[in-house]
Length: 105
Image 1 (cartoon, helix red, strand yellow):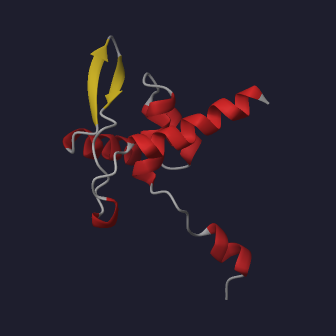
Image 2 (image 1 turned 135 degrees about the vertical axis):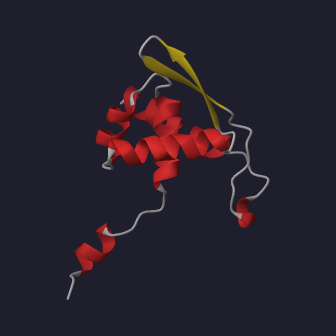
């Protein structure tokens, strides 16, 4: 049987897709290795998520030397029907504003 602490740690409000998008918004030149380390998933999973986000139109990739630079389309709507019509800009703003407040402390 699992403890209540284990059950609380087993789920999160944000999907890995949202977390990857937020990390790219924080640093458009980030590497998949860095994203993977920060959010606790494999580099392969990050690559797969970046491909999903690219194919869905949430980001574009530009190759600069051996690195990628990402550009986000923050006007793309959330995909789930109950949030349809809301731009992902709102989610990104929530977390980037949070970053600004943390830096000011």
